[in-house]
Length: 247
Image (tube, rainbow, N blue to C red):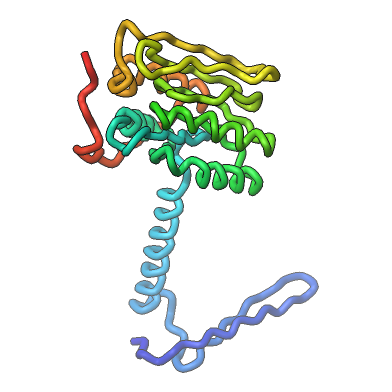
């Protein structure tokens, strides 16, 4: 049996013109036969550790389509919970997403710039409601200073949007003109696709982001950009973050 002493393995390679050999000297004990119980145990242990490592690599491998959707809530994080609903559905479809308050937009734009400079060319997709919709265009304008493209913007009732810059390939703006919502316009050099969709007859400023039909449309546009998505089981949403969509 192998005792508890530290084993020191000295490996040397002896090369000749026709062949090479490897000799292993085990100091402190006599090398066991490969058929001995100790050797079998050593081999099985090594295989077990290797299987754990390969399993971890498989779990870490990306199981999704390229792209990231950045969603932004409006005032006080309480009136834009439709963004959380959309993010949950996107994650279920295998599309990476994150939800933030609109006040965090500038720092997150800096992160996008840093990732792009580091070589990340995944599609950037922006989505927001109310003040959160306003900052999607603010982010796009900041990215435009570094010639970073924005693949898609989907907005829900922005209240004071800037003009859409020319680095945006596509923007869809659902808005309610009878309330606080505004249509969006574009810079003169804009060459992408812009659609203002009037939803005045179907919803209002506080429920537009939770409208199930509009959510499905928004997700379909994301899927068209990312090439779909690989389904995976998402984490259960927090009850406080989900509210019923209007009928």
